Image (cartoon, rainbow, N blue to C red; front, side, top):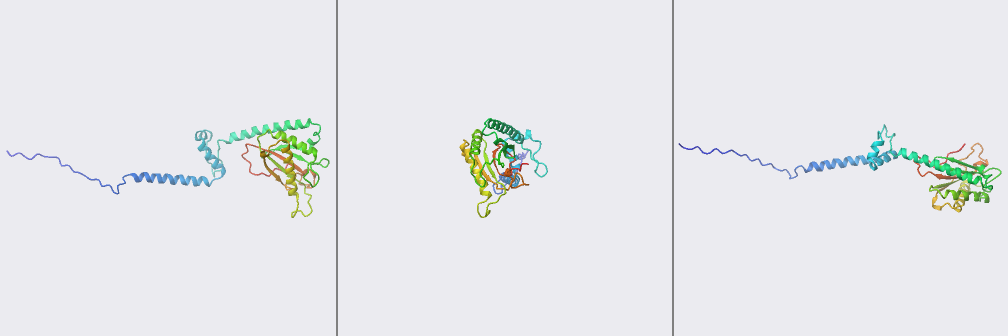
Length: 267
């Protein structure tokens, strides 16, 4: 018998052509591009937000775990209700600082009260917590003036009084602002020449020098302000002596709501 040829399996080879030789690398590059674009738009969005949003975002990246534990939401409505994990701590620190400043002022006033030379002057001193910090205000009266009328020269008792205050404030780490205020009595040729603005600023500087002489370091002074008669203590009587005063502000170290340096008008 004639043997049949051996049956061999037919093998088909398919050659896969590589178009351009890139394979799937383009997908990785595209994913990186999309990620970069997303990051760019997030940064642009953040840059367009207000300070509260910026602080909230910064707090998240500083402590993402603590942020999520302390916050139930990030944005609400039009980004107005931002929950900042540091808000509660900052408020508590400010309240603690208020208590310390009040205690310090109480001790200072008691110390000055025990000095018979200053006892009468204490009736012309007002101490109050304001937005910026603790304000100590020295107010003129018709019978007892801190400055000679129309000048920035402190009388000897007032200068010594400020030196005593400076010695006490030197123990604090807080920055100090000194303000000068006048009544509305105008100078001849006010505006073009010497005016209540110059007078109030020079009086504030005289008070600053007395505080410095008492031991308050120069670097602790943050600002000297002269308001002339723009913030009257008694608007109903702009010529009243109580409108002439010096304000010493011990600024809060922890102050998150300081938006307006203008002092409040006290009733």
